[in-house]
Image (cartoon, rainbow, N blue to C red):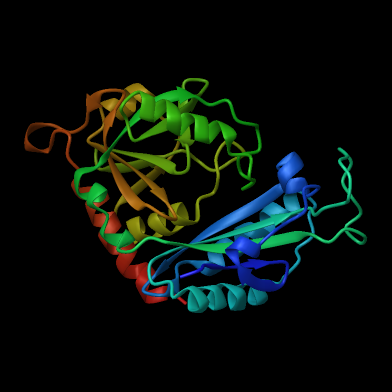
Length: 291
Protein backbone atom coordinates (compact mmCIF):
# COMPACT_ATOMS: atom_id res chain seq x y z
CA UNK A 1 0.00 0.00 0.00
CA UNK A 2 1.33 3.44 -0.93
CA UNK A 3 1.71 5.67 2.11
CA UNK A 4 -0.15 8.96 2.11
CA UNK A 5 1.69 11.94 3.57
CA UNK A 6 0.67 15.52 4.31
CA UNK A 7 2.55 18.42 2.70
CA UNK A 8 1.41 22.03 3.07
CA UNK A 9 -2.31 21.31 3.18
CA UNK A 10 -2.43 18.44 0.68
CA UNK A 11 -2.58 14.67 1.16
CA UNK A 12 -0.37 13.03 -1.42
CA UNK A 13 1.36 9.71 -2.18
CA UNK A 14 4.79 9.67 -0.57
CA UNK A 15 6.52 9.38 -3.95
CA UNK A 16 5.01 12.72 -4.93
CA UNK A 17 5.68 14.50 -1.64
CA UNK A 18 8.21 17.29 -2.16
CA UNK A 19 9.49 20.47 -0.54
CA UNK A 20 11.77 23.14 -1.98
CA UNK A 21 15.56 22.74 -1.98
CA UNK A 22 15.56 26.25 -0.51
CA UNK A 23 13.51 25.20 2.52
CA UNK A 24 15.27 26.36 5.69
CA UNK A 25 14.60 23.02 7.36
CA UNK A 26 16.86 21.45 4.75
CA UNK A 27 19.45 24.23 4.57
CA UNK A 28 19.61 25.43 8.18
CA UNK A 29 17.89 22.80 10.34
CA UNK A 30 15.52 25.71 10.99
CA UNK A 31 12.61 23.52 11.99
CA UNK A 32 10.81 21.92 14.90
CA UNK A 33 9.04 18.59 15.13
CA UNK A 34 6.87 16.32 17.22
CA UNK A 35 6.29 12.57 17.19
CA UNK A 36 2.93 11.34 18.44
CA UNK A 37 2.44 7.64 19.11
CA UNK A 38 -0.64 5.80 17.88
CA UNK A 39 -2.02 2.75 19.68
CA UNK A 40 -5.12 0.93 18.47
CA UNK A 41 -5.62 3.70 15.92
CA UNK A 42 -5.76 6.46 18.55
CA UNK A 43 -3.35 9.30 19.35
CA UNK A 44 -1.40 9.15 22.62
CA UNK A 45 -1.04 12.39 24.64
CA UNK A 46 -1.82 14.58 21.63
CA UNK A 47 -2.55 17.70 23.69
CA UNK A 48 0.85 17.45 25.37
CA UNK A 49 2.60 17.32 22.02
CA UNK A 50 0.68 20.33 20.74
CA UNK A 51 1.50 22.35 23.86
CA UNK A 52 5.20 21.63 23.42
CA UNK A 53 5.03 22.34 19.69
CA UNK A 54 3.55 25.76 20.39
CA UNK A 55 6.35 26.48 22.86
CA UNK A 56 9.06 25.39 20.41
CA UNK A 57 7.61 27.62 17.70
CA UNK A 58 7.39 30.57 20.09
CA UNK A 59 10.96 30.12 21.32
CA UNK A 60 12.19 30.32 17.70
CA UNK A 61 9.78 33.10 16.70
CA UNK A 62 8.41 30.76 14.02
CA UNK A 63 4.89 31.03 12.62
CA UNK A 64 2.39 28.23 13.17
CA UNK A 65 0.82 27.26 9.83
CA UNK A 66 -2.09 25.37 11.44
CA UNK A 67 -3.97 25.40 14.73
CA UNK A 68 -3.82 22.48 17.15
CA UNK A 69 -7.39 21.54 16.20
CA UNK A 70 -6.49 21.55 12.50
CA UNK A 71 -3.43 19.40 13.21
CA UNK A 72 -5.62 16.97 15.15
CA UNK A 73 -7.95 16.62 12.15
CA UNK A 74 -4.95 16.10 9.90
CA UNK A 75 -3.45 13.44 12.22
CA UNK A 76 -6.72 11.54 12.32
CA UNK A 77 -6.97 11.73 8.54
CA UNK A 78 -3.46 10.31 8.16
CA UNK A 79 -4.35 7.47 10.55
CA UNK A 80 -7.46 6.69 8.49
CA UNK A 81 -5.86 7.01 5.04
CA UNK A 82 -2.92 4.81 6.01
CA UNK A 83 -4.88 2.29 8.06
CA UNK A 84 -2.51 2.93 10.95
CA UNK A 85 -3.13 0.76 14.01
CA UNK A 86 0.11 1.00 15.98
CA UNK A 87 2.91 3.38 15.13
CA UNK A 88 3.76 7.07 15.04
CA UNK A 89 2.99 10.29 13.25
CA UNK A 90 5.96 12.54 12.57
CA UNK A 91 5.16 16.25 12.22
CA UNK A 92 7.67 18.89 11.10
CA UNK A 93 7.30 22.64 10.71
CA UNK A 94 10.02 24.76 9.12
CA UNK A 95 10.45 28.49 8.59
CA UNK A 96 9.71 27.95 4.92
CA UNK A 97 11.45 28.39 1.58
CA UNK A 98 12.40 32.02 0.87
CA UNK A 99 13.79 31.19 -2.57
CA UNK A 100 17.44 31.69 -1.67
CA UNK A 101 19.87 30.84 1.14
CA UNK A 102 20.29 33.52 3.80
CA UNK A 103 21.14 33.46 7.49
CA UNK A 104 18.56 36.17 8.17
CA UNK A 105 15.06 34.92 8.93
CA UNK A 106 12.58 35.57 6.12
CA UNK A 107 9.51 37.71 6.80
CA UNK A 108 6.73 35.26 7.85
CA UNK A 109 4.19 37.56 6.19
CA UNK A 110 5.91 36.89 2.86
CA UNK A 111 7.28 33.35 3.32
CA UNK A 112 4.81 30.80 4.68
CA UNK A 113 5.97 28.03 7.00
CA UNK A 114 6.34 24.53 5.61
CA UNK A 115 4.43 21.75 7.36
CA UNK A 116 4.80 18.04 6.62
CA UNK A 117 3.58 14.92 8.41
CA UNK A 118 3.77 11.21 7.78
CA UNK A 119 2.99 7.92 9.49
CA UNK A 120 5.30 5.09 10.50
CA UNK A 121 3.68 1.73 11.16
CA UNK A 122 5.05 -0.31 14.08
CA UNK A 123 2.70 -3.23 14.73
CA UNK A 124 2.61 -4.35 18.35
CA UNK A 125 4.87 -1.50 19.53
CA UNK A 126 3.42 -1.65 23.05
CA UNK A 127 4.45 -5.31 23.32
CA UNK A 128 8.13 -4.72 22.61
CA UNK A 129 10.23 -7.82 23.46
CA UNK A 130 13.04 -5.43 24.38
CA UNK A 131 11.01 -4.15 27.32
CA UNK A 132 11.08 -7.66 28.78
CA UNK A 133 14.87 -7.89 28.76
CA UNK A 134 15.91 -4.24 29.02
CA UNK A 135 18.56 -2.32 27.10
CA UNK A 136 22.21 -1.41 27.58
CA UNK A 137 23.60 2.12 27.33
CA UNK A 138 27.02 3.71 27.16
CA UNK A 139 27.92 7.21 28.32
CA UNK A 140 29.17 9.84 25.88
CA UNK A 141 30.01 13.52 26.14
CA UNK A 142 27.06 15.80 25.45
CA UNK A 143 28.15 18.02 22.54
CA UNK A 144 24.77 19.41 21.49
CA UNK A 145 23.75 23.07 21.38
CA UNK A 146 22.63 24.75 24.60
CA UNK A 147 18.87 24.97 23.90
CA UNK A 148 17.89 21.33 24.10
CA UNK A 149 14.55 22.33 25.60
CA UNK A 150 13.41 23.32 22.10
CA UNK A 151 12.50 20.29 19.99
CA UNK A 152 14.37 21.16 16.82
CA UNK A 153 15.51 18.90 14.00
CA UNK A 154 19.17 19.39 14.96
CA UNK A 155 19.66 15.66 15.52
CA UNK A 156 23.11 14.99 14.05
CA UNK A 157 24.89 14.47 17.36
CA UNK A 158 22.14 12.24 18.83
CA UNK A 159 22.41 10.18 15.63
CA UNK A 160 26.18 9.98 16.11
CA UNK A 161 25.57 8.91 19.71
CA UNK A 162 23.36 6.05 18.61
CA UNK A 163 26.06 4.94 16.18
CA UNK A 164 28.68 5.13 18.96
CA UNK A 165 26.46 2.88 21.04
CA UNK A 166 26.02 0.42 18.20
CA UNK A 167 29.77 0.32 17.60
CA UNK A 168 30.27 -0.42 21.32
CA UNK A 169 27.72 -3.23 21.22
CA UNK A 170 25.13 -1.28 23.23
CA UNK A 171 21.57 -0.23 22.46
CA UNK A 172 21.77 3.49 23.18
CA UNK A 173 23.79 6.25 24.82
CA UNK A 174 23.28 8.57 27.78
CA UNK A 175 24.92 11.95 27.37
CA UNK A 176 27.01 13.54 30.09
CA UNK A 177 27.76 17.22 30.65
CA UNK A 178 29.97 18.55 33.47
CA UNK A 179 30.02 15.09 34.99
CA UNK A 180 26.25 14.58 35.11
CA UNK A 181 23.81 12.76 32.85
CA UNK A 182 21.60 15.06 30.80
CA UNK A 183 19.46 12.64 28.80
CA UNK A 184 19.59 9.86 26.24
CA UNK A 185 20.01 10.38 22.52
CA UNK A 186 16.23 10.46 22.04
CA UNK A 187 14.86 9.91 25.52
CA UNK A 188 14.84 11.06 29.13
CA UNK A 189 16.96 9.16 31.67
CA UNK A 190 16.07 7.87 35.16
CA UNK A 191 17.51 5.77 37.94
CA UNK A 192 15.84 4.16 40.94
CA UNK A 193 17.74 4.20 44.24
CA UNK A 194 16.62 3.77 47.84
CA UNK A 195 12.99 3.68 46.81
CA UNK A 196 13.19 6.94 44.84
CA UNK A 197 12.92 7.68 41.14
CA UNK A 198 15.66 10.17 40.23
CA UNK A 199 15.65 12.17 37.00
CA UNK A 200 17.30 15.40 35.93
CA UNK A 201 15.33 18.58 36.58
CA UNK A 202 13.91 20.52 33.65
CA UNK A 203 15.87 23.39 32.15
CA UNK A 204 17.65 24.33 28.94
CA UNK A 205 19.83 21.20 29.31
CA UNK A 206 17.14 18.66 28.47
CA UNK A 207 13.92 18.30 26.53
CA UNK A 208 10.72 18.39 28.55
CA UNK A 209 9.56 14.96 27.43
CA UNK A 210 5.82 14.50 26.98
CA UNK A 211 6.20 10.89 28.08
CA UNK A 212 8.38 12.09 30.98
CA UNK A 213 5.57 14.31 32.23
CA UNK A 214 2.99 11.54 31.93
CA UNK A 215 5.23 8.96 33.60
CA UNK A 216 5.89 11.26 36.55
CA UNK A 217 2.11 11.61 36.94
CA UNK A 218 1.84 7.83 36.88
CA UNK A 219 4.59 7.57 39.51
CA UNK A 220 2.57 9.85 41.77
CA UNK A 221 -0.52 7.68 41.18
CA UNK A 222 1.54 4.65 42.22
CA UNK A 223 2.71 6.53 45.35
CA UNK A 224 6.32 6.46 44.21
CA UNK A 225 8.72 9.21 45.32
CA UNK A 226 10.30 11.29 42.56
CA UNK A 227 13.44 13.36 43.05
CA UNK A 228 14.29 15.77 40.23
CA UNK A 229 18.05 16.32 40.27
CA UNK A 230 21.15 15.48 38.31
CA UNK A 231 22.99 12.18 38.79
CA UNK A 232 26.31 10.92 37.47
CA UNK A 233 27.26 7.63 35.83
CA UNK A 234 28.76 6.19 39.02
CA UNK A 235 25.49 6.73 40.89
CA UNK A 236 23.56 5.25 37.98
CA UNK A 237 25.77 2.14 37.95
CA UNK A 238 25.16 1.58 41.66
CA UNK A 239 21.39 2.18 41.39
CA UNK A 240 18.81 -0.52 41.98
CA UNK A 241 17.46 -0.04 38.46
CA UNK A 242 17.26 2.46 35.62
CA UNK A 243 15.00 3.25 32.71
CA UNK A 244 14.35 5.76 29.96
CA UNK A 245 11.17 7.21 28.48
CA UNK A 246 10.18 8.43 25.02
CA UNK A 247 7.06 8.73 22.88
CA UNK A 248 7.92 5.63 20.85
CA UNK A 249 9.53 3.40 23.51
CA UNK A 250 7.21 4.48 26.37
CA UNK A 251 9.05 3.21 29.49
CA UNK A 252 12.11 1.13 28.63
CA UNK A 253 14.20 -0.57 31.37
CA UNK A 254 17.96 0.01 31.27
CA UNK A 255 19.83 -2.97 32.66
CA UNK A 256 23.47 -2.17 31.84
CA UNK A 257 25.44 1.09 31.87
CA UNK A 258 28.99 1.23 30.48
CA UNK A 259 29.27 -2.54 30.87
CA UNK A 260 28.03 -2.63 34.49
CA UNK A 261 24.87 -4.65 35.06
CA UNK A 262 22.34 -3.10 37.39
CA UNK A 263 20.54 -4.81 40.26
CA UNK A 264 21.72 -7.75 42.34
CA UNK A 265 20.98 -11.37 42.99
CA UNK A 266 18.28 -12.83 40.77
CA UNK A 267 17.55 -9.33 39.41
CA UNK A 268 21.09 -8.66 38.20
CA UNK A 269 20.93 -7.34 34.66
CA UNK A 270 17.15 -7.65 34.47
CA UNK A 271 14.33 -5.07 34.34
CA UNK A 272 13.40 -3.88 37.82
CA UNK A 273 9.95 -3.76 39.41
CA UNK A 274 9.57 0.03 39.29
CA UNK A 275 10.21 0.34 35.55
CA UNK A 276 7.99 -2.66 34.88
CA UNK A 277 5.15 -1.19 36.92
CA UNK A 278 5.48 2.26 35.37
CA UNK A 279 5.39 0.85 31.84
CA UNK A 280 2.28 -1.19 32.54
CA UNK A 281 0.34 1.60 34.27
CA UNK A 282 1.50 4.25 31.78
CA UNK A 283 0.18 2.22 28.84
CA UNK A 284 -3.09 1.56 30.64
CA UNK A 285 -3.61 5.24 31.40
CA UNK A 286 -2.58 6.50 27.97
CA UNK A 287 -4.94 4.09 26.23
CA UNK A 288 -7.79 5.42 28.38
CA UNK A 289 -6.98 9.01 27.41
CA UNK A 290 -6.14 8.44 23.71
CA UNK A 291 -8.07 10.46 21.13
